[in-house]
Amino acid sequence: MSLHFGHLFWPTTHPRPRRYPALDSAKRTRAVIIGGGMSGITCGYALAGSGIDAVLIEQGYIAAGSTSSNTGLLQYSNDTMLSEFAETIGEEKAVTFYKACGHASERLHVIAERLPRDVQFKKRSSLYYASTPKDVPALRKEYEILNKHGFGAEWWDEDKIISSFPFRKSAAIVTNGDAEVNPFLFVHSLADEAYARGLSIHENTLMLSVEPAQSGYVVRTTGGDIHAEHVIYAVGYAPEQAGGRWVKAKLNRSYAIVTDSIPSLADWHERFMLWETARPYLYARTTTDDRIVVGGLDENVRQPILTERDLLAHSLRLLSELKLLFPNYEPRIRYEWCATFGESEDGLPWIGEDPDRPGQHYLLGYGGNGTIYSMLGAEIIRDRLLGIDNPIASIVRPDRHVVIPGSGASSS
Image: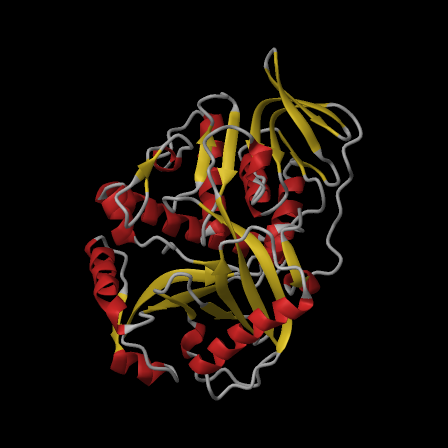
């Protein structure tokens, strides 16, 4: 099943990436990673950096799935606000989780700076604005809990917003320590580094089955069997490939456009990343070559839209929203796409060992913070294989008790 439809921007920035050979013989390893997107490659990098022998297989090409349609916003704030998490999992766990997301952003920054290729990683602040005046009380509540726990958020009133941007909103929170990145360049650069550190990477290698063996598992593929102690499912928005009974994903589709370069972005204050309190929400960022990326219009349909005409209709709606924010710009759409994305009921990713299948691990970073979750998951799984307790592991474990934000309902 295709994960996106349209004309993608990021692959044009790196048109001749390194290719890796398909598996053509049996292998034995400590861990096998299934999936060569952001989650799989980040995990492979973490394992290789810790001296853990690992093999990564990808049924197509590295970063050709959801990573190609990732819009590259890295924020510690989640689609589910800290104040909402405090009500569902408790304030202490919620703060621990949010701080871990902040740490993951910092780790990504450190990694990006060490890569030999420029992956267009830029530290940014984010403006999280009230879509309507009725959203201000909840936004204020979020600001207060962020500041209570030392996140250093700023409260912007209407006057402050209008003095910095050409649009008027009732209120906003500014968070610092966020970032933007070119996800396609980042994943390919990370793959190159992981490979240099000893990660075995095989493209065009399809996983056929995972079967128990005397010591671990046999992963049967189109190129040969891989014997491994651990199997890590980094299969993105194809959760059925991971098996098990714990992952209950909500698969939707979203839209994005990338404009031509804008002659002047002078009234885009400090290139802040923008998003809003409405659900689904609109979001926007700039690029290093002065384009604008705008996304949103999420729909509760798994399959991406499949006609140019329907895609253009959604793209024009995104363009219209951009013009409402920045009426002085004359942007033109250069790239547009629709893509599948996944969410969990409680806003948390599925990361960790399946209690029904010891040695099989999920690395499914569902939600608006997929790249952040990929970094969290890579470290959680690395620590598990090294025998180290990770303080986040219990919060995101696959068999956690799920409480749905805003409803008080739970599921198991």
